[in-house]
Image 1 (cartoon, rainbow, N blue to C red):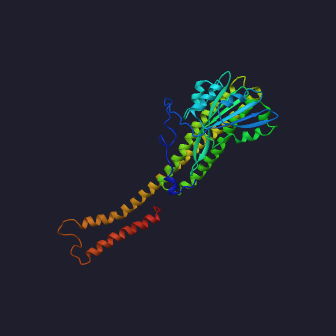
Image 2: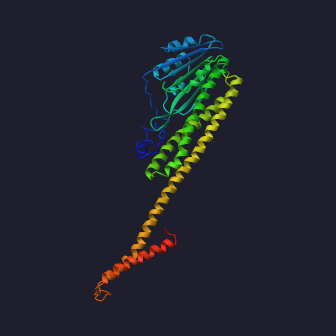
Image 3: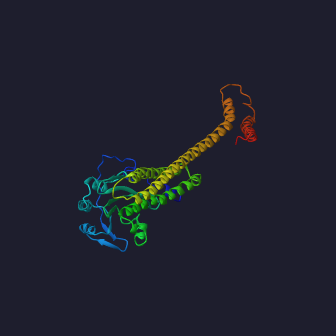
Amino acid sequence: MKLDKGNFFKLWLPTRESAGRLVFENPTDNTLRQDAEKVVITAYVYDQLSIEKLDLMEISQCRNLINTEKKVWINIDGLRRAEVGQICRQFSIHQLIEEDILSVDQRPKSDIFEDFVYCLLYQLYLDGQFNELRREQISMVLGKNFVLTFQEEATRDAFEEVRKRLQSATSKVRQYGSDFLYYSLVDAVVDDYFTTMDSYGEKLEKGESQLIRTNAQMRMSYILFLRKELLLFRRTIFPARDVISSLNKNENALFNAKTLRYLKDIYDHILQAVEMVENYREGMSNLQDLHMNMANLKMNESMKVMAIVTCLLAPATVIGGIFGMNFSRIPLLHNTYGFLIAVGIMLLIPLWMIIVFKKRGWF
């Protein structure tokens, strides 16, 4: 991000509206999600030998797909209360899970039932002219021979790599069960964290050199911008660690032993992401310290200049005060060159002080 004056004052700072309830989240605030303008339903029906991609027009078509021995992945882009409720009823998904799918700013979580496994994670992405960090809620449900995924928008897709692997008959996604597909989708979301975190790391690295060439107001704006993004990282990745941990430790029959071993690998990745966030937190602290040191240095320089000016003017003030006293007899009062002599002394003493200060290295 280019740190010019125009950009700095266009950066929006955290408020209840603009920060996406980043700071002001209230768990008792049941804000209803606005229905999406468009819902896109995509289904992949596959086994080891074949795969078929279907673009479905209605939710009612989803239930018919799981009556075969093939594995099914149904992805819904765009959330509407009516459609989500319909598909949850078709697949006998608990009403609490339906509410979590439709929630706004829900904390990343996982719920493990006997017949299905649910987890909610966030995809992190960069958006806008200034590459602002944002997140999109993703819900994933694993059942017997099927996986359901719910995304807020169709413009972004964290699962593109999984779709490519599905096209290969030799890939493990095709060879293994639906639980491996579920693992692959979760892994894709977690791996995508590192892309956005690398971008944030570049901002921190460039920030130290850029802040030296900017004024205090621009520095503070940039630091607040980075702090907001760091807070979003923490509120997304730290709870995701607990989600992956619960999936890793679950004993649900929907997961076989092979897939559980792969889930341990995701847990290692999320721990690495947590460590990166902690490192960025230290970098953010260093950036704040740099800002404070630069502000103090500038203040010290200003005070130094003011002190020098005060010292240089002090002799003139004293001499002017002496000659301004109301006495009948004052030296040089009636002398023709008295005024010039007094002014000359006022100038010579500061010049002498400047020479002394210069020799002592005071400025």
